[in-house]
Amino acid sequence: MSDADNHPVSGADYLRQILRAPVYEVATVTPLQDMPRLSNRIGNQVQIKREDRQPVHSFKLRGAYNMVANLSDAQKNAGVIAASAGNHAQGMALSGTKLGINTTIVMPKTTPDIKVEAVRGFGGHVVLHGSNFDEAKAEAERLSQEHGYTFVPPFDHPLVIAGQGTIGMEMLQQNGHLDYIFVPVGGGGLAAGVAVLVKQLMPEIKVIAVEPEDSACLKAALDAGEPIALDQVSMFADGVAVKIIGQETFRLCQKYIDGHITVSSDEICAAVKDIFEDTRAIAEPSGALALAGLKKFAEQNELKDKQLGTVLSGANTNFHGLRYVSERCELGEKREGILAVTIPERQGAFFEFCNIIGGRAVTEFNYRYNDDQLANIFVGVRLVGGQEELEGIISDLRASGYPVVDLSDDEMAKLHIRYMIGGRPSKPLKERLYSFEFPEYPGALLKFLSTLGTHWNISLFNYRNQGADYGRVLCGFELEDSDLNEFSAHLRELGYQCKDETDNPSYKFFLS
Image (cartoon, rainbow, N blue to C red; front, side):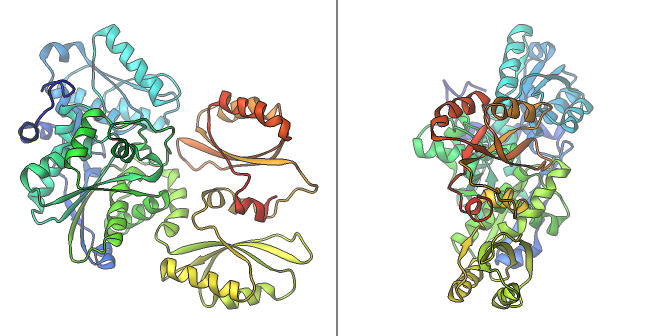
């Protein structure tokens, strides 16, 4: 196909490429499965495209195979290369094996062993390089130049986009009466491919793009009118953790997508649970992203009796990461609220508090004696009526004279504070609090402590391995105002994503 940067590919050309894509030499036609429990709950017919049933358990196989299969004989003989820590890597490895092509995959050194071994199992030659995707990609491009390999990008190429577009073709064949199709967006290959196909054949179907709130590179590009790089992205839904959308994928999304919505990590966790309850499939977070957007869009736009299709884009999840999903899914469904409540420090006060809560189940209660007069408690409450019920509980508590802070949307409270209730310093401290994210690799915590811990006293520390590819730390430092400039310089040297949490209300309630 033509180079999209110089000769934009038309919608009709994309349609022809999608219809002629040889993906079924290696990929399968996946079912569009009914979700009866969710359909009944939200009053719309919901169907989910089971791309987790591909041989590599994700849709990425389609685009990778379509591009590799369309290379010239000379390119095939020279070999292909890609950079990926996830699903694109496995799709490339299987594609190369199927076609008898030497395939090299450059993966960051931080990639979990299970993913590295999966790529090797599909026949790919793995090169471990760098501590993140950008460093791995730079090495892949260098090796491509050095050895004459063809570099196969994960999303921003017309052949890759056309391969992903076969998903849209199958969905229309399986249910030509869909009103909406919801697609996840990372680099935009899947969304672009599905949208361009649907708009050529059934333009009345609305295609809605879904992104995580903290990795919304398409939204940033739409707002700016061109692709722009995000300063940082969350790694929770690592399959869509892309800082900048592709040039060609953005051109197609801007032209063909009908709407856009972002969702929180908790809403993604709730969608993982919905998928499991209806299909018994365990989606990776990015695989459940589009369903989370479907639910939110249907609620916001009061959709009823519509036929809604979505894509389960992948199921290559780290099993231990399910701990986090399990903890957060009820919050994402608004079935649980988390509150900080101040109650009198006297006998019977907790009983009186529970009477105000009524017959609702208390899901969590954290408290430690600290003061003769007042006690701050961290409490979770099971909800049936969602946000409206939670607001009613807060109103009842305040009417009874209990100060309340709603922590249900406070990330630090949910991630760290709930495990640390009761720890207060025995003396006044000049303390500042920071949260950090860093890649989970041997020596990461040592780097953290050697860069910061040897210069300033650490007064608070909380770390919990969530089974993900990255770690989260909450850390307090004794800092004078005169230290802040030097401390900020060390933060920049450290290079980890961080946030000043000193003014966080849950910290002030329970730890300061």
